[in-house]
Image (cartoon, rainbow, N blue to C red; front, side):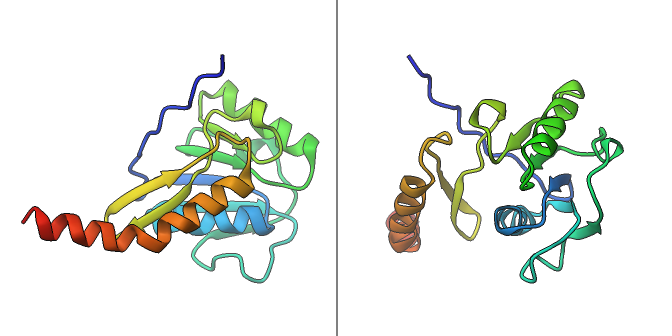
Length: 157
């Protein structure tokens, strides 16, 4: 039996998050984290042009010393399996929750699709089993989320 992951909403305002990687996955995750108030540091030899300007970008190869207790969360989203695994091992040794984009078994948490209207949020996750399903469900929820939130507040004022 596979247990569902426990959905946990965490306050990341002014908390540091480390992302290893500078591609599309890292960029999307950085955008979401920044939108939630996190201070994002990203390390990668290259960054895509659309990588969020709000992130502190360190343009170089990953070093072991990048992983330290300053970070609330760590995300390994490089295009190198060996780097992602090393990040996982280092984060786990420091008891820092880590998400590894290319290995479901190396994730302490899954990065959900975030749907929000103001401070009212919902998230969708397939626990890493189907990003396509997560994307479809979250897009469908985005279509109605603001209507539902407004309806609730109108009915319960």
